Length: 152
Image (cartoon, rainbow, N blue to C red; front, side, top):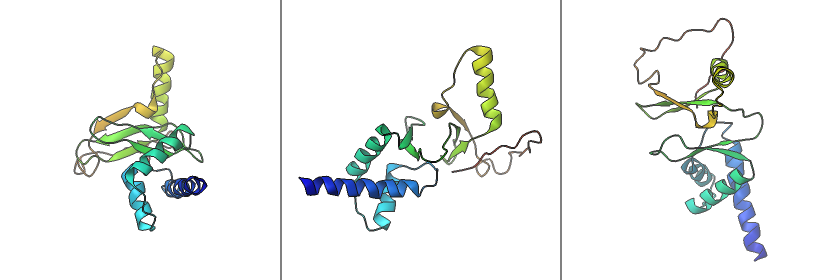
């Protein structure tokens, strides 16, 4: 019994190590299983999901369910992960973090002027990414404030 507990602890540490290597980007259970396999640590999908749920309950990771079609994705909660909105491309399915001061102000406006708190972890804007819109998206540089928008 003691050996089995130690084995599970090793699996959890392998999984957590892979999660930390995602560098704050979204990942799926399949991504973690693939990373583990590349490192020679074969772990079954049921084990990956079980440990993801444990890490979620321990506050180590965050879980995002974007739509009813795609599976959940996760994000490491370590060092300075802040709430953010998501952009989902309806063309290719890409999920983009939108950690943007303009959206933060929009959220503040809705809270202050409309008495409604937005849950940024469940807020998704749907549209087309720059690749799928074939360059029809104009990028406007914000001169007042810097946006820290970045893709994952």
